[in-house]
Image (cartoon, rainbow, N blue to C red; front, top):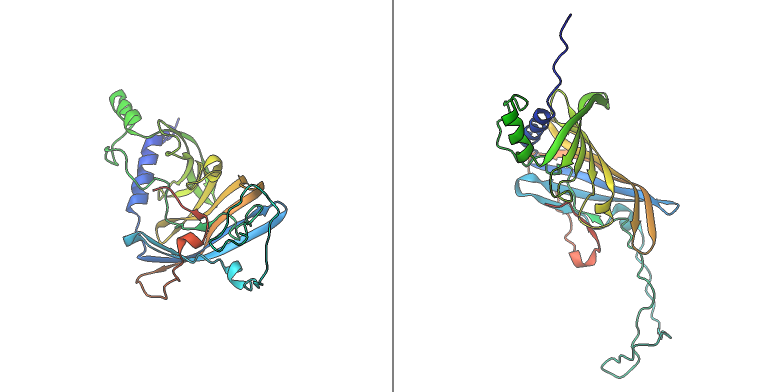
Length: 283
């Protein structure tokens, strides 16, 4: 009877994936569009932002004005005298006249989730080696080595199955953080069986502000010229401030184009204090 092939060791798969991601060739400059969309109540909203990333200097330039906002005509401002009837503040300006004070909730931002200062090359910590074991070491050979791996790794790693993601065969790993679960966000990972680059991930929380940090996200990757890049990040439901509920949230990286040099017109500089919330990934 022909012997069955040995079951791949999940820690070896995980280490090889981290090595492949870290060693992947990076473009000197990437230009792309970030699409942020979701169903706001019952209305589908979408914002698109032009962006450029220079990996060598870790510099992200994002146009703070979305394509949709730039197409809208500026509001017509008229002179008016506002005298709110709300009591409780007897503040007076320097000239002794009545002081106009805004009453009510502030208007919702035209940006669905904030201006996305994001790059498709972000790898959720997978490109930061955390173990000293060499890549070729057989991590499953001997109890002493297994014990060393369980203490050196940030995650306990198990192999769930092998399946295809977009016609690419993958190893499906489950990851359980051994400490600091808010920082170690990976929960599932699909790794290509031939190149050990990621095709999909499930993370527990995304970005740096609630409620985005409190819900699971699905991350889909593609491989462009040997480099893993994020295609989209999706979440089912976000309960935002001012009783705003957004469902079917998708953050997508579109029209990705590599550039070898630093040519091209710079994006306009916008005062961060004027653009409202900003989407950021933790460092």
